[in-house]
Image (tube, rainbow, N blue to C red; front, side, top):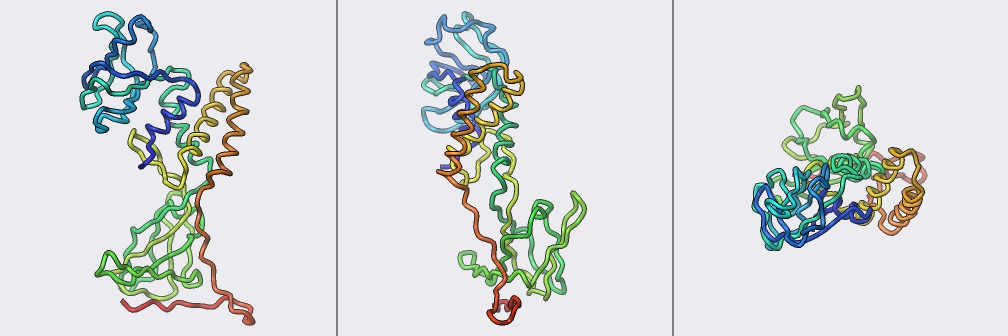
Length: 295
């Protein structure tokens, strides 16, 4: 099952001890009510607090949606949160998680992306290029310029989507030409490739931004590693806000650093080996192999 931004935020808030979870007794697309909260909270207690619809009775929408609480009514209507519309009705029995404003929601979303990038590049694949006749130079997306590609593959068969026969090209048969920041680079082949075939470029790049509740984390990053990374970034941020003046939060950051290192060792991020040139023993140089299989 995909691990989403919503789940990452909830798990991290819970690890930080900032959550209150309960079952809704009624609701709508813009309200959440829970009679069990009677006399537990005050009307002005939820300024800048956030809500998450952790689960629904049928496992369907609006599960996972979140936002900032608009207001809370203690008496009229009783124990009711007003929220931005989640499009679908919040029903009795849906699981709701409330988080306070110590770690602001929008800041945590930004820190989620910082947490992903802080663990280094991940393996991505680009399939945007299709070969053309009388052409050896192809523009590559900006995101592919960070490093040389891990491998470049050529689609041998175009008539069967279940049997593409991807052929890995030797690095000696192409080169990457850099370009100014924000501009596309060039992938130049030594020889022309048959036209009408897709290229698959494996590369290392930044994790795509997490922006909405359903944004999915790369499956190559274990959920516990992602959570440990976000919790650490959140504590670094908070201790900077208070200039390290609170011993509890300073100790909590030290603990988070240890937990992150343990998670890195326990759940390493998978990264494929780069495809190297073939060394011919005795020749002192790399063999030039560029035989593309016939389509």
